[in-house]
Image (cartoon, rainbow, N blue to C red):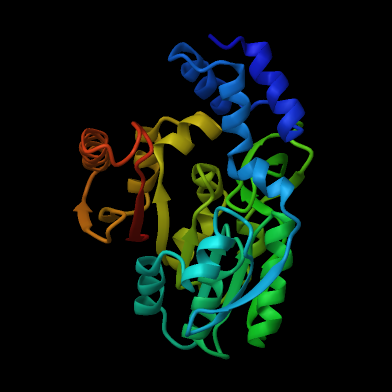
Length: 313
């Protein structure tokens, strides 16, 4: 069995940060199932976060067909896949292309290296606007390189996170990082409410939000914007991230979503669309699909997530 002090020390030595509550609980469970210190070290060293600290960043320009994106081809979460396959989440790209029209305004919360922002920029054309938010310094660097590579003049990047109040957070992980309380990482970022930033926008047609569990706070911080413009929202329902990263019970977030709309399309990993009309239906669907994924040895328990699509009423 692994002691808590051993796990915390491994985090400090190998990742250079404090163990987050979700990670600590995960390795405590693994210790109860037989993982020893050698296994702990090997598992952390195989993680994307550790490997991202070992590989020097290198930019590669990838042509996705409708736009170009700049990635670190050695980065294990996004960069490597995009460099090899020339795309990322094609079903999400297809949704953005389907709903956006020339002249529209698209808001990208959690823009990463810009795959969805650049997809949107190509769709809305020079008379449309892209407002992107991304706090990770490596992602910011690649995003801005992508803006230059595409020659976009309608893309604005804000290099900070969105939340419900002005706060300082730690950035945990590599490209697909997430926010945790200040002091848990050597990387810190500011988060601001989005409503004051977006208050003067004449129109907002679509908002994409994918921020690894911080969605409840970010949506609360743009509630006035949502009510004013009633955009299409493309988001994520990830109970593991909600629980581990911010301690938000998934039913509470489901209730928040259905305070904004009365119909949600829950999109599975294979693109299958399920229409749900209540928070309880969303939770029930997730529980059933999660159980099916576990029974089929497709995913560990709790790792299933949905993409969500809805229009604010």
